[in-house]
Image (cartoon, rainbow, N blue to C red; front, side):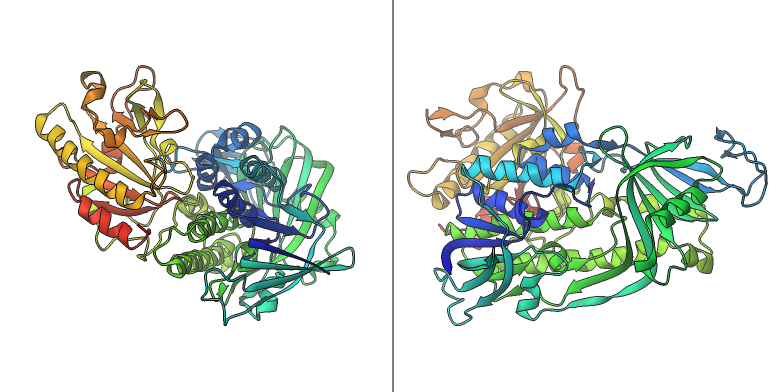
Length: 611
């Protein structure tokens, strides 16, 4: 038997574990990932990448590769039974294929819609195989830490927690047993993440249960190369026909397509065959031809929604991803919510292990409160979503194709990953916020982006690009138009107070902006302001060459080639009043305060960070 010691042991190399590991590797935390497969995932089942997940990749500086390789979902097409007049036309002019009967003879296109609600995100909804998503995360881990910390071929057998020493932050109180090639290995860790899927060994060894239910709804899913004359085969499409329901998800590349197919009256899932799925698809697509040249992958499943009754043991072992919530795949939530579990826990573990948290276990407790809430909302949404896709439920409740279309579009904020809203905690304070100062920046939700112009070089940027995921807290100062003397004097006073606060929390010898990333967003005419009018607080001297950093000041102004971003208007901020916004390392808004209320900012951080 061998034994190793590590600060964080991640059991399972899926999206949640890999995303958490990116944080840990960037922060210099020792960790290992135990993965039962013999190598990296070759072909994953998940593929839908929410706007919010693209934003997460952007925060890691990884979105370009993702967007370049992925299929971009721009438009939704809705099809319904052709019961109008048998001519295959819909809405007075969307003409498709003529059919010969006026009753139940085929399908017709009824509506187009934007896949994502306009303005909900500056990033798109895309499709990319989970294997490639995992590979991008693993590459970033290796780049940040200089080595690969994924151990393949390890079968986790269980975890034990020494509760007597769990309150000692320095204790390696978790022991995980695993086997590889019939040899037993032990790993001692301060913290363990159970990222080992729906059949989680970690969850079972802790005695936690999945609570929920199954439905009678059975769906098939297959990735195919279709030979067809159906006109919307390269669009995300929802088809409601007399023969059943089907959803089309085009895949990356130009050929592969995923079909989700409702299988009515399927009593024994184990007896369904690939040919059953092919035949169901052919019936649903009539009068269009649908021949399958090749099926790359397929599966059938009965829909169920379940959530773990507990998410942690002694705040030392945490469940993430499918280990603590399972649901249907049609809304594209699984990989995304799992990855965002890892995004939530990763920076918090790093803060605790680097000794920066005022209340370490209080900080880790926010993972449980925030992600339990998210999981519960996910399960509730998935129940209603599953019913919406059920032919029998629609018939029983008189839901028309038009009703389906409207509800589908309304659910877009949730399916885009933009509905997450965290409640007050040690690191979230709506109660002390002045929300009326920034109505477009609701406390508890992710910081939305807006176009701004960087002051030093006139470069047009999305403001969120200046809030990278590097473990620092972000303080965004909206100071208004400093061409006016009163605004300039107010900003100078704010800068002096912020400087005092920064020095209280920043370790001696560290860069000025190592704990806080302080940004200044001005309004007004950029070319009528000079660099010397920007206080030094927003121009820190740092880095190897101890140079002034000029990249922290932005202006809400007209650009040369990209128009005006109207950031102040987007955020609901009056330039004459201004605001200070605290944004967490994971880009969620923690507090909105008056521009002159630096004391409130300092008091907030007294409860979060060590001096």
